[in-house]
Length: 451
Ligand code: UD1
Ligand code: MG
Image (tube, rainbow, N blue to C red; front, side, top):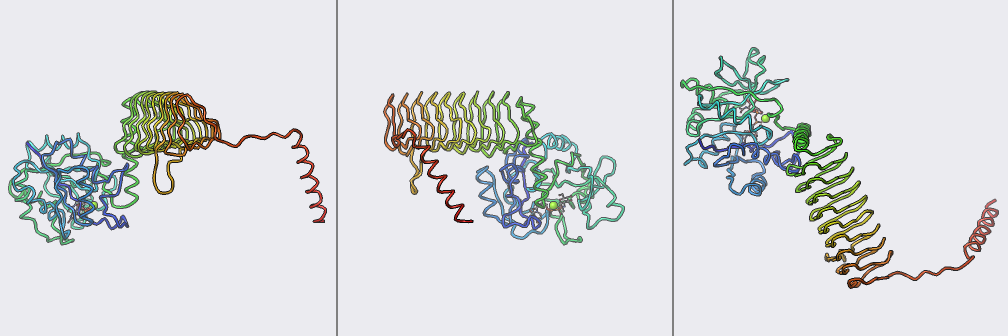
C-alpha cells in the first residue's frame, strides 16, 4: 500500500516565546520539522504534505530546502487538527493509498513504531499511536475496549473517570486516505475548545462499524515540543540516541554526554572522540582518526589517521587528507591540507591549500583578508613555514621552500627557496647590564622623590 505523509505544522507555538515558527526551532542543527519528516521516511512516502500556517513562508522555504518534492499547504486559520488535515485534502485528491498524520512538533517517532502501525492497519481501518504516560497531563485519553479503540477523549472534554486513564494519544494516526477525509467530513466542533478534533474520527469510525485500534510506543518517541524546556529535552534525547548509534558503529566516545552531534554527523569506526567536542552541521570524520578534547568542527572533512585538537577549530571548507595533524589553538577555514601536513600550534589557515608533508610552524597566519576581499594562499609540498610567519595573500610558497620564522611574506617564494622577511638582529655585548643599572638608578631616584 502506498503511503502519504501529512505533517501538521500550522500552530503558533505560543509557549516558545519566539518570533520564529515553532517547527523551525532546531534540534541537532536541523529544524524539528525536518526531524519529523525524517521520522516518516522509513514508510517511503509517495507524497509528503506539510500543513503550515504561522510563519508559512519560512516553513515552506525550510521544507523545500530539505525536500523539493514535498508540498506545503496553507491552513489560514487554525481550527483544530481535523481542520488541519482537511487542508491537505486537495493535495491528495488523486491519491488512493494510506495517509499517516504526524505532528511537526513531535519529531522522534521510531521507524519500528511506524512499521507496527502499518502491520496493525491490515486488520483495522484506523490505527492510532498511543503511549503510557508517566504524567498524562492534558493529553487526549485513549478509551480501549479490548483491542479496539472506542474513542479518544480530549482532556478538556473528559470525565474524571476518563482522566484517570494513562494510555494517551500521541497524535499519530494512520488510515486509508479516502476514508480519513470522509470521516473528517463528519467531525463537528462541538467541544470545550470549539475545534475540529482529528481525534473525533475514532468514535465516528466505530459508530460506522469500522475497526480501530491503538498501537503503543515509548513515551520518549512522542515527546511534543511546546516550550524551550521541551526543546532542550528533545535535544538531549536526540544526542543520547545519536551517541549510542555511533558507539554501536564502533566509535569510542570517552565521555559521551559531553559530545554534541549534528543531525548529519558521520564518523567512521575506530575513531576516538575525547570529551567536550562539538560537531556542527556537515561534518564527516573517517575511520581511525582521533578528535581530541574541546575541538569545534563544522562543515569539514577529516580523513583516516587524522589527529585534531585539543582545542582546534575546523570551519566550513576545511578538508584534511589522510594523516593530517591539527594541534591546539589552530583554526582552519576553507583550506585543503594534503596528506601528512601538520599545523600543530596557534595558527590560522584560511582560504589556502597546503601540500603534502608540509609543516606549518607555531603562530603562522594566512592574512587572507585585506579589509575588502579574501585572497588565497598556496603552499606546496614538503615546505617548512617558520614560526610566526605572516603569509600575506595572495601568495604562493613553492615545494620544499622555507620561510624564516617571524617573516612577513608578501611576495611569492619559489620552490626550494628560503625567504627571510624580518628585521636584522643587532647584538650589543654588555649593553644589557648597562641598561639594567641605568633603569635601577632611575627607579631609586623616583622612589626617593615619592618619600
Ligand atoms: C493533540 C491531540 C491530543 C494528543 C496531543 C499529543 C487533538 C484534538 N488532540 O492535542 O489528543 O494527546 O495532540 O501531543 O488532535 N495543528 C495545526 N492546525 C490546527 C491545530 C493544530 O496544524 O488547526 C498542529 C499543531 O501545530 C501541532 C499539532 O497539530 O503540531 C497538534 O496540535 P496541538 O494544538 O498541539 O494539539 P494538542 O492540544 O496538543
Ligand atoms: Mg500539543
